[in-house]
Image 1 (cartoon, rainbow, N blue to C red):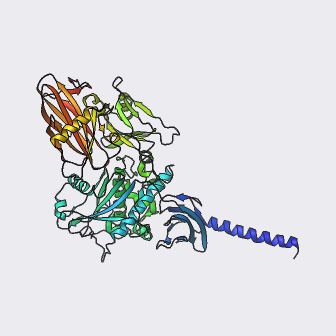
Image 2 (image 1 turned 30 degrees about the vertical axis):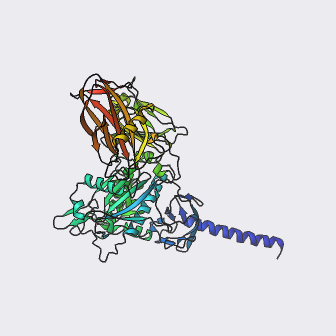
Image 3 (image 1 turned 90 degrees about the vertical axis):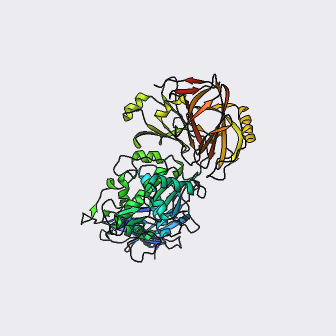
Length: 632
C-alpha cells in the first residue's frame, strides 16, 4: 500500500469513527447539563431528547458505582426523557443507553461541606410501633427506604428548580451514612397515640419540638419529623395524628400518605405514574381530590418540602405553581411528562413546562442566600440589624457583609421583595420610608425578613419597630453564666449567687442596641447552647409605685426585682414582644432588675418594656429614670 493510500484509509477510519460518535451524540442529547459538570448532591435529574421517537426506554448506567442504583431506568415520552442516577463521591463515568445508541457522560460528585443540614426523624408513640397505615396488601413497611428516596428527590427538585432560576444547582445538605443512604432516626415518644390525638396542632407541634430539641438540636439542623401513628378512622371518617406544619427548626407531617411513596430511586417514575385508586374508606385521601396513588405521593412529598422550606424562612407565596402555595400538589411533574388519569379525569393530562411545581422568583431569591443552601461552610458573623431612625422615622437595615434579600410580608404571605442576589457588591445599608413601604404593599404594617451575604437572617415587625423607644434596649451584661442542663426546670440560683451576678453586671459597661430585641448571641460567643445568661438594669423611682413589665423571650425567662422573682416562664419558644405581662411594685429610690434568659439553641434574647398602671408606655432612660411616652 502506498503512503497516500494508507493516509486515505486512516482518514476514512477517523472520519467514520467521528461520524459514528457524532451520530450517537445526536441520537441522545442532554438538555440540562454538560459533560464534566460538578454536582454537589448525589442524585441529579437528567433531561434530554432521543432522536428515535419510537424509543420507549432509556437506562443510565454508572460505571463508577457498585451500589444497587448502578443501573436505573428513566422515563421516555415522545422523544424526550427524564432519568435519575445516583453518584458516588468523585468522578462518575456514566452511560446513557437507548436501544442501540449510547451517550457517555462524566459527572463529578463533590459532597457538600455545609454544616447546616436536614435531618430525618420518624416518631412513634410510646409503643415504638413503626408501622404506617397502608391499603397495600403485605406492605413491606420499608419506611427508611421511602424516606431516603423522598428526601433525595426533594433535594434534587430544589437543585434543579434553583438552577432554572439562574442560581446554579444549590440545594440543602442531607445527613448520609457511609453507604450514601439518608440517616433515618427513629424516635419513640413518651405517650400513647391517644395522648397526641387529643392535642391541637399547635400544642402537638410545640410538644414534639421541645421533646426533640435536646437529642436532635436545631441550631445547625432542620428536623423533618413524620409521625408513625397517623391513623384514618373509617367509622368517623377522620384522620388522627396528622398535620402539616413547619417553622423554627422543625417540619412536622403525618404518615398517612407514606404508603404511596417510592421505596427506591428506581421506583420514583413508577410511583408518579401509579394510577391505582386510593380507597377513602380505608385510608386518609390526601391527594387534592385526585384519589390516586400518584397524586397522593405528589401532594404529600411536595407538602413535606413546603413545610421544610418554612424552616428555611420562606413564607407562603401567591404564584399558583410555587412550592410555597398549592404548587406542591404538582411536585410529580418535575419527574413526569403527564399526569396519569385520576378521579374525574379518565385520560392523561399533558402539562406545559410552566405548569410544573417550582420556586417562584421571590422564593428563589429568598432561598439563594440562606445558609441552608450554602453548599460549603461559612463563618459565623453578627446578623443584620433592622431598626427605626428615631429622627426621620424611616426603617433602616444594616448588614456589615451586605444585604442580599429583603422580604415584605403582609398577614403571613409575601407581598413584595427587594433582591440583591445578583449584585457584585450588595449594599450594606438600606433605608425604607413608611410611605415607600405603603406604596409597595398597601400598608406600613409589615413583617420584614432580611438576609445578608453570609446567609444570616433578621426579622422584624414594622409595628414593633415604630415603638422602639418603649423597649429597654440598654443593659449591663453579667460575665457569669450557668449551665442549663434540664429544659424542664430553671437553673438553681442562690441569694448569694444573685448578688454576685448583680455585682458582675453593674461593673460592666451599659451596652445599647438599636433594635427592641436584645440579642444575647453576640454577647456570649463562648457558650450559646444550654446556658443561662443575665442582663441587669437599675431603675430610679422618685416614689413607690406600681408598673407593668411586659416581656418576651427566646427561650426560658426569669426576672428578679430587688431580689424577688417576679416573672417565671419555662418554655422553649421564639421571642415576641409582650408575650408575658406582670404588675410589680417599685420602691422609692434604687431598684435592681435582673433578667435571666436560658438558651437551648437557635435564637437567644429578650424583649422588655414598662407601662404605668393606666397602660401608658414608659421609657427607661440610660440614667435609670422611667418617663412617660406618647404613642403615635
